[in-house]
Image 1 (cartoon, rainbow, N blue to C red):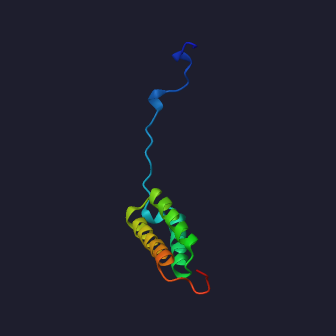
Image 2 (image 1 turned 90 degrees about the horizontal axis):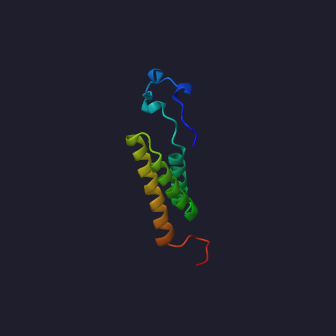
Image 3 (image 1 turned 60 degrees about the vertical axis):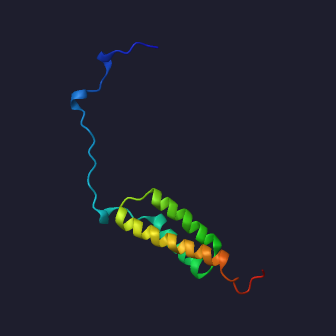
Length: 103
């Protein structure tokens, strides 16, 4: 290993400042697209009885939950999307067969 020479170090510790993040208002945060997509997929899963849409809604809910920024509003949206996704799965797997499909 080469010897470390402090005299050639161009950094100046006295000029270093700690990073301070700026406060962002909740209405200025970017839109949570995965939460919005989860609501759309959840509604499609319930209304049109598409199993794939209900499963995609659950995946988008998990992604939105992992990336949650604003606790109050995001939690409301995620919980609504999760309820739609779960209702879609329950009606798809435990409800009566869709008309026009062979069982």
